[in-house]
Length: 423
Image (cartoon, rainbow, N blue to C red; front, side):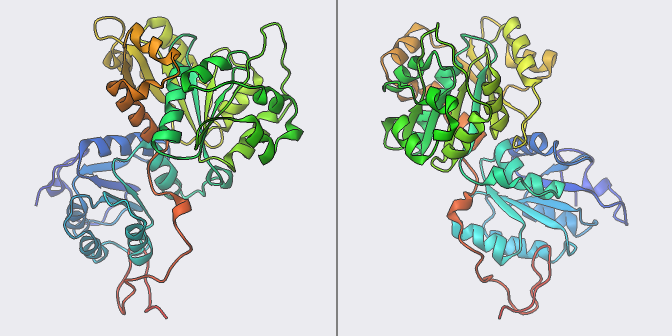
C-alpha cells in the first residue's frame, strides 16, 4: 500500500516497527492547504512537521501501520461520510493524541458534532489561512494556552506601508469596507496619522472629525459613549476614527492611550483596522504591537523591498502568532521585481499581489467610492486579504456552552480520549 507523501518517502518504504513518536503528522488533500499548514505551523513545533497528501481515509491506512504522533491533522473535505471516516480513524490511533480536523462544512452544528461528539480537539474549514491555523491549531500543537487578551473582543489588524506612496491607506480603507459593508461585521477603521485623516475619509465617502486626537491626548475620557460620539459613520456597521490636524500643530499622545483606545474599541467592534503611517511615532508602535495581525504593503522596487525588510524585522507583538502578511502592490509584470524574484533574493513570501490599475483607480478613490466596488481584480485581492487576516474559521462567539455528546455510545472510544456512556 503506497501513499504519495508531500514530504518524506512513501509509507511502503517506511519501517512498520516501533519508532520514536513523531511530533506532528498532517494530511491534506490539496497542495494549497499543505503549503498553508507548513508555513503556519513552523512557528509552533520544534521538530519538523510531516505533511502528506491525502485525507482522513489515507490517515487511517497509515496510522493502522505505524505509531501515532502527538498531534494528527486530517482532512475530511470531499469525504462522503466524514463522521464514519473519523470513527474508523478512532479505531486505529492511540489514546491521548490530539486530532485536529480540516473540512468544508461551515455550520456550528457540525463543529459541535466533531469536537464534542467525537472528541476532536479542534476543527477549521476551508479555505484555511495562516491566521486560522495559528489561532486554533497553534496553541494545541505547542501545548501553550492562547493569551486570554487575544481571544476577548474583536480582532485588530495593523496595515503599514513600507514607505510613503505604496497604497497602504487605500488597501486598509478597502479592507475595512470589505469587513464592515460586504461582510456586515462591526468594523472601525483608524487612520493613525493625525494630520492626514481626510484621505481615508474621502475614500470611504465620509467626513473626518477630531475624535482620534482627543482620545490619544485624553485617554481618561475614552469609554463606549466617547467612541459612539467620535467615530464617523460610513455605513451601519462601518465607522471611521480619524483626525486632520494642521501641520503646525504638535500632538502629544499620552502614555498608554493607544492601549486604552484599542481595548475599548475591541469591546464594540468585531474588527479594528489600523492604517499605520510609514513615519511612525511611539503611539503608532504601540498600535502595531497590540495588533493580532500585521499587513505590510510595499511596491515592486529595490528601495521598496529594502524598506519592507526593515518593517518585517520589527519583533512581533504578544498577540501576533504569525509572520506579517506581505502585500505587493502596484505590480506590473513588465516593470519592477516579480514575487518569485523577491522570494528568491530576499526570502520574503509575497502572500497577496495587486496589479497596477493606472490613474483611473486613483480618481475613483478620490470620488469617495471604494475601489472594491468597481475593480474586480482588486476586489478579489481584498477578499483574499480579508480571509488571510481573520475573516474565516469558526467564530467562538457563535458556539454555546458544551452540550451532551451526541455520539457517546456504550463502549465507543472517542478520538484522543476514552468515555463512558453519557448520563
